[in-house]
Length: 425
Image (cartoon, rainbow, N blue to C red; front, side, top):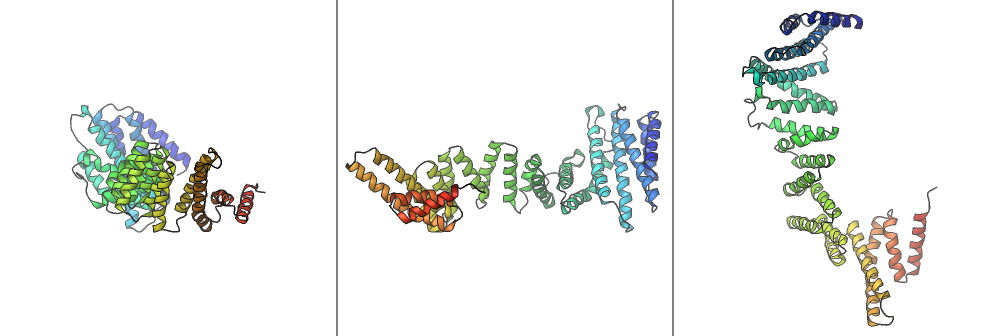
């Protein structure tokens, strides 16, 4: 059948349906459903599909003029049966080992679910007086197709079509809360349900469906595997939605429940430091050190807080603990050297304000020289460990060598800094 003849059929059927009320539209649609069957001939199969599509459209068109609640419910119910018939035909192809339309197979289930849900919603309306003409049969069909609704989500996951996968998995999970199914899924505890929630968390975050991630995270956390990643996706989704308060709350929950998953601790520390909440940052660092005193990350985090507070002695003390645990730690070496340089600069400033040849002058000069000497070893270690990061260590070593009168080393740093400042060609 040509495209033109198809639309001619739609128009003729539409004109015919204008003379019919909702009951007659349903009657005609049911005839179409009853007569629809699998056809080997391609043209005939296309006609069957088109007749079912026209029947569905007539049912939806009839809704606009139908005021009776019971008739509206029946229109939705019959539209669901159209989708069920489409699915039956594809199922028959599978049974006969014929080529079938996978997308139509799964989408017909999805659409049937949506129509059955709308039918039940209408029956729940207050003016329907609590009668449920279609709920029993709708429930039976919903349960019958539930496994394949999930299979549709899996199919799209394998295809890496995450938008469609999310759509199917979302309906699989949310439909368990349909009033028609409420007695079938009371206190949902089966492992498949929580596993599907886990799948949808990663899928939802991947496509930016952050509200969905937040909605299903509590269920996904009941799944025994990879709970720390569910919590991380939950945190990241709150952050993506600019809900800082919820993000921080979930970070703290993550630290408490998954202390070995460092995303929560490092993210919270970065936030607290950025906001100048140093005491709280130290509190969390100390808690984590108590949990695992041999984890260099927690000691380094504490050192970084002290650096931001300009408490250089405590910064150095914590860097020393880090270096005891990991002597090759670049950041601990860097901040230890930087802290000594900052202390040397403070002593230098105090020296310049003192009387020349005074005891205070000599004291501050001695301190300055001592601090620069102590800065040399960790900064040279930074240079050895990260030779390509000269912009970090060269200016500091320049000051160290300058103030210790190390001419050759100073000249080398001067050349390196000059090369850094050269514009790229």
